[in-house]
Image (cartoon, rainbow, N blue to C red):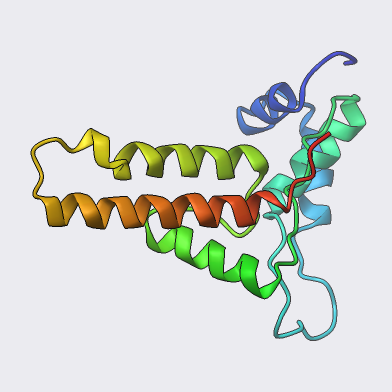
Length: 148
């Protein structure tokens, strides 16, 4: 099945159109938790169905999706991440550059003072402060992604 994408293989698995023996073998291989006690700081991995889909996709020769990045944030970056989410950024801890850009553009659209004509001067001043804070947080978090 060369040339098939991961999404095609996953759709086959979910709709039971893939080889049943391969799906069963792949899904049961990851059904049990690993032996030994779990670390208290362990991050939960993908679900057994997702793992099975990876195995079936790899066996079918389909390209696998890229993993999400794991960020180690410095204190200013943690503050910026928290501040951007406090303003309504809705960023996940494993955000990508495009996720960051989308969150900032959504905030800029909502907070820019020129978009709120009928508001009072105090409200426009608050929006201006929030917009400036969001831009600062965005600039700090943008340093996580080096430009090419």
